[in-house]
Image (tube, rainbow, N blue to C red; front, top):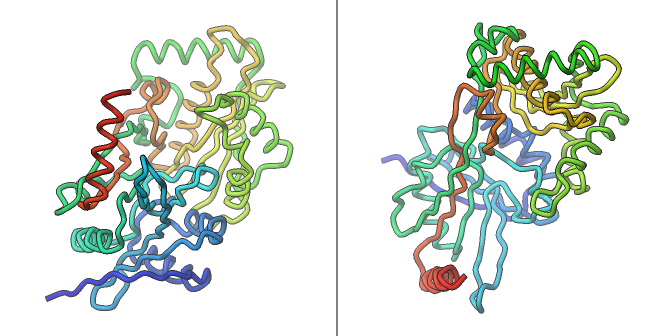
Length: 361
């Protein structure tokens, strides 16, 4: 009978875990930039002072799965709740470089037994809530014994790239009549008012002037308390500057700069893999209030044809429900925020208090 085990390293030595992670990443051979050392190593660099624990899943003493684990305690109505986070810290400033496609780094053939083992281990650790967010996988976490699983679905969108998306006109032909009309009208308006739209790809590190301009426009767009731009957060800035400066063989940052005549329309910032383009953020010059001025739509449409033409297979808008994503995509899916709550007396009391609070609010 195959034996699986789980162990925890409390004090992580950076170079040692890097070797383990990179080896397992290579063995699994999946394209997921958010579970690559390119992302995870940078996250660990920033959060190492919090002493995240490394969970190792082994099959017959060979490492088949890895994940980081941070735990905090909060008090709710007099009850102390122990919350844990997979590959996140649980602290907003360090988690604002949002991880998507989050998961245990594991080969699918080992997922089922290791998930069950992890569930048993959680209860032994006296954990009340374990959060895995945002993840593509959900089925494996449902119907686990002695645990309540809450799942929040987040719509996500992408474009499958190919022959039909390799030119502006062929790509538009696959969109709705209304979207085609809006894009053509916007393109005509921008080029008439400002000049021909061009794309300048910048691999890895932006110039200091472009980085400053990108941050200014992003902060202007996301400036309310509920959706504050990451560029107000020094940890977010440090995280992304480090990514730009430290590409790997398979992963890097790329920014497309869009110009129209003598003006800069804006920036689209991407996580780039071998076959996959993940749109991460935009910074747009809203210098014109005419309703035909739709620089964001035009920029994405041109970017989709640009990446299709040079051979990428998928243009991923990732999580978040927006009209422009629905209009420009040809595929939809869901990411999930999963919260595991092992059965316990304390958790039962906490859940009862939550229901009472919800009923009177």
